[in-house]
Amino acid sequence: MMNNWNIKRIFCLLAIFFCTFFSFHAFAQAEQDTPRSGEGISTFLERNNRPAKTYYKEFLKLNEKRLRGKEELRLGVKYILPPLRNKKRTNESEDKDSTEVVSDVSSESPSERTSVKRKKSVNEPLFGKELANVKITSNRLQGACFYVVSGHGGPDPGAIGRIGKIELHEDEYAYDVALRLARNLMQEGAEVHIIIQDAKDGIRDDRYLANSKRETCMGSPIPLNQVARLRQRCDKINNLYKKDRKKYKYCRAIFLHVDSRSKSNQTDVFFYHSKNKPDSKRLATTMKSTFESKYDKHQPNRGFSGTVSARNLYVLANTSPSSVFVELGNIQNAFDQRRFVISSNRQALAKWLMEGFITDYKKAK
Image 1 (tube, rainbow, N blue to C red):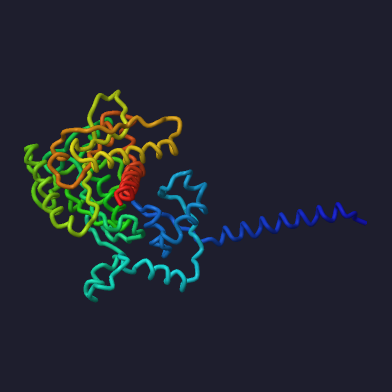
Image 2: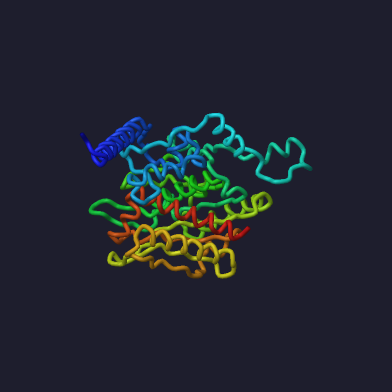
């Protein structure tokens, strides 16, 4: 006859077996999907009918090992989707998100009230066919307006780096980061003007981005002369800003470039601000702080050596809205080149720049 200790041991073993079995069964039954090219977590969840605002944190928890401490998706990896919640409640929360974004509209006419409804999505063909539809998943940048400018373009490729016989053109990599940043900002509810445009490229996940001279300044041919080129994009921004400043309480421009230095010179991201605009300095400082915190989290032993400084650059001095000029790295250096040629790194740059804007927007309120 078995004693009490043996009986307890058998019950414990059975309990462990059933817990393991049901956990494995639940995992096997969990809905999974593989991300498409260029998808971030929010877009991935939206495509699977799970609003990011509701499911984002749960997704991170379910896929903690797969994400490896990063909030970035990898192609070819299957991710567990959070179980769908009560459909009625989910729809109610979505409807709640689409209500007016102002707190007091009692004095407005019905037509005025309709005009302040928050959009649920934006269509931007510049992102490419697969990513043209942008679902707005947050209102963290509602009331903000941005002018996103990638450096050079058209007849001017900017700095040129090389990996073997392959040329890396500054304008192509700055443009891809600019598109990713613009899309991220739109998802957060911001109004975004993409100043330099290429009707064909879209957001690309290739390592080596094909070179072209198709870029325009919002449809206008880009001059080869440097001063004329810079004046053209400043004029575009200033003309838009004249109208935007009446509708948006926060307007900022960002100029994205890739530096060219000695091959042996590994650099971090550098931020430049206008000498005469306190908002420009605060934005650049906030951006640097954001990158420092990200490096501390993802590369704790490396450190971050990027700097903030005032520069008398033409675009900073001649744009009406406060702006920041960003050098993303050294296109000649083999280590920095990984920051550009790996698409997930370009996405990370765009995401961190967006988070810098969100932090600065909160400070400006």
